[in-house]
Length: 422
Image (cartoon, rainbow, N blue to C red):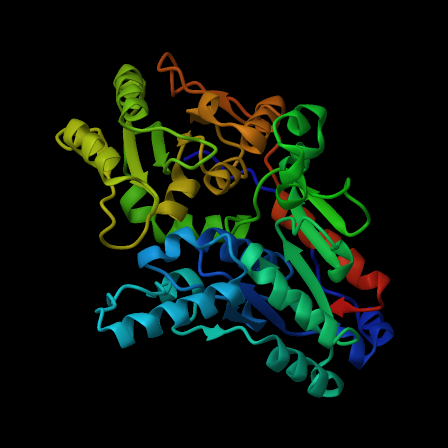
């Protein structure tokens, strides 16, 4: 197993003098996370909480949308309007005698393994703001961390209703009115639409809806990729947990992570067949291969790979049953092959400093092509061609976005006279 070359987060314990200087009302001991029901967004918040040393002090609230039926075409609406429209449609169906499908508004909860919580409370801005105000003298200020477009309204309302009691961090760019937040953490490629090339790709009448209004200012912390949970402590823990299963495998161990097509990175069975041919070409140089699918992986893609490799003794395919080996794979892999659609999976793999090969990058458009370019320029990724010798290693400075973002949060808190009780 190659060593996990990860820098430690630059967050340390404060001295007694620092605690005294901050005062009882300036010490943050609790965090409210506002999620949107999607692991990619919520894991960014929880990863930042961990990097700040507050993982045992956070409560997760959620902004949820109706799901199922026609709701999948209504995600462009503001959440509040979407819920009202869903209610009206339901009432019409009831009065007209139309049977509403049970899955119409189903909200899929995360497992305890993913969130650490068995139940999640619906986010209510007024209640959270009232809690922040009423408990300020006893508990100190409240740190609120939110991620995703659907959380912007609730998070900014909390800040507006409890300005003196809350420090608000919004992850992912809210596009406008950044003064609603104390800090915005967003990847550099979110500003691609402001580049000359990006501007030429957007009709002028759509620009205000899909691009940041102006270049980053003092409210903005830029990262290369997404924040995540795969810090050095988590990977060391995963290396221990998965030792008995992964340590005995023949080396080098190649981990293949398959995402799913998106509007900005489209592919189908053709890319899957291309991946199969490339993997067959490099199998000679691999001791073992482990393949995992994401929740977005189309069934036809997974079936093609299962049919091709299920009988190959070198290849193991995780079928979704049992514990998710993702963190164990990050800890024990010698190299990765990852589909280009997933910013999160690429960000996590590039945190390890191990070789990361990307397939399908040429199919990415818009700001996601810019993200691929930034990783390539840093030397963090290479295109997967099928001509590689997986036993040959190469290295680069690992991404450290989550720890660096946490450091910037600490600085912004200090500028306000607040500090973290870590």
